[in-house]
Amino acid sequence: MHRLNIKNSFLVLTFIGLGLINFSSVIYAGEDVSMFDKMISITFKSLAKSYIATSDIDNLKKKNIDKLIKMDEKKFRKQYLKTYPDLQKLPQPIRTKYGITEKLTKKQAIKIFAKFDKKALYEIIDSVPHYLIAEKFKESIGMQQKGDKKTNIMESIKSKWDQIIAKIK
Image (cartoon, rainbow, N blue to C red; front, side, top):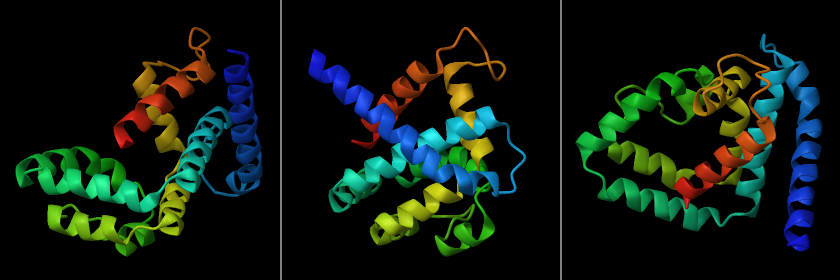
């Protein structure tokens, strides 16, 4: 049990450190976002980058491509169109570079996934607007307003991250 606490403490410190390293770029990002929302976003971006840094990207790509291959076109379209409004919020150069359009087909998505490497994934993570990550996080935990004292943010972040990792694997 003691080992688990040390591990969790190390992870928290690592993610805070990564967040602070990325903090200077956040200040100049030009987004009109509260510090609270930036910290939520920085935390999730740091978690995502750490996950990618320590993952077997080829295996991860294969698993996700296999899921797409098994999915019928109708289900793909339904899921993609549900996600597309958020994808539209990525910067235009990223959407263009990775072929993100409203009419993206399953076949095109598979080709895009196949080309991903760690560098591309880091670029995409960095391009996601802070407000979007914070908004989705708050929606997922049912938070009505920023600074809601009834919500333990660190526990909520850990819980949400665990859910994300479970979906990825």
